[in-house]
Image (cartoon, rainbow, N blue to C red; front, side, top):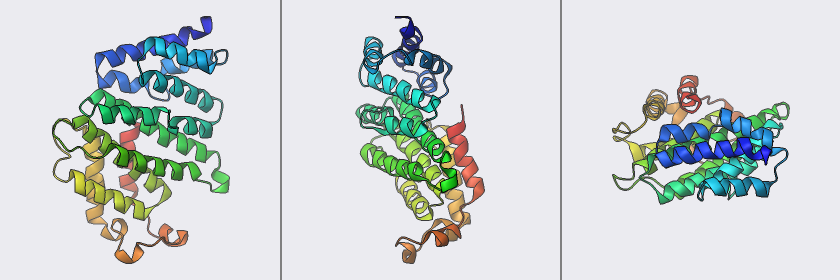
Length: 270
């Protein structure tokens, strides 16, 4: 079928990149704006979901066949002006974010799997932000709040690395923590940032700068720690603030803008 031509081309590229085992080849193909994926969207208007999934299985093994097919379905919703539906597809039990997370949990030593998980998790944050942007006049940030809960679940499911050979798990867990920090900064959730900082210190203090850790992640973590040291009144939530605070009270405790910029750079880097 002619409509499957560009779709098969995308699947073929993804299959070859996975076979190479190179993170630098796998990660870009899962970006929301990858050219080959964008070209594949033209064929989705005349292809059923079953055909899309069937084609994926001819090129890819599970879970990557399901991840690739759902990724394209989400891109189709996003291009149609429905980032909210794309977000729901991406965070579903069979969605790309959960699929890549489960793959990393099974292969905690494969850096290319960690790279795929990083990109799919980052995509959920971008889609949530785009969905909320459509509702900016109403002040609705429901998808950003939802992605915060989703990332918390992912962090708990993946867990920190416990053995030296689990370098990919360490990288993936670190990425999720930085993503969650980014979401909390956007929501001005001081208590959430404080909890993430405690997680950073507990699991990564003294070892983030290990060989093999992406420099962009090191910069982001150092920025978080540095601002925590410089602005303890902002970052470290006292015991008497443990209970939920009124929104007005939280908005008086603004987060450092420079840190937002440094952390955001990690997720918008090519």
